[in-house]
Image (cartoon, rainbow, N blue to C red):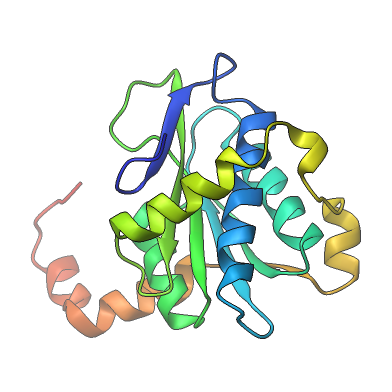
Length: 183
């Protein structure tokens, strides 16, 4: 069951590679149903246990469905994913994160092409497609090394672009020279 931003579960209990792959396949069906020519998805992940590995599993499914992906080269918070959806003009974004939940949790968030929370209609569509995928037998996948070699998956530095954008909105040098320490 997806909430506004996606689905969360306890790692290894219900948040498993199988279920993450099923979620990724449902997002692929959602994107494909829109009839977008040459679709592309941005994928990010946080620092939780196995988040990077889960994000790579998502990338393998995205690429296995002939959808290109941009995969963050390092852990990032959700706002960086949203920014990259917009700045890279992708058709959506996926971030592996459980946000504020305890450390034994992880999550799968979907950000549509407008980079905000998915509308109830989008969530309903993804849940419908998810209900049609009873197991990973119905999931298409391409190994990550092969997807990279084929040009389907590109690993990118997703933070530089975001940090540069922040510098247009905040006077970083004034903050640095103020003597104030900010965490």
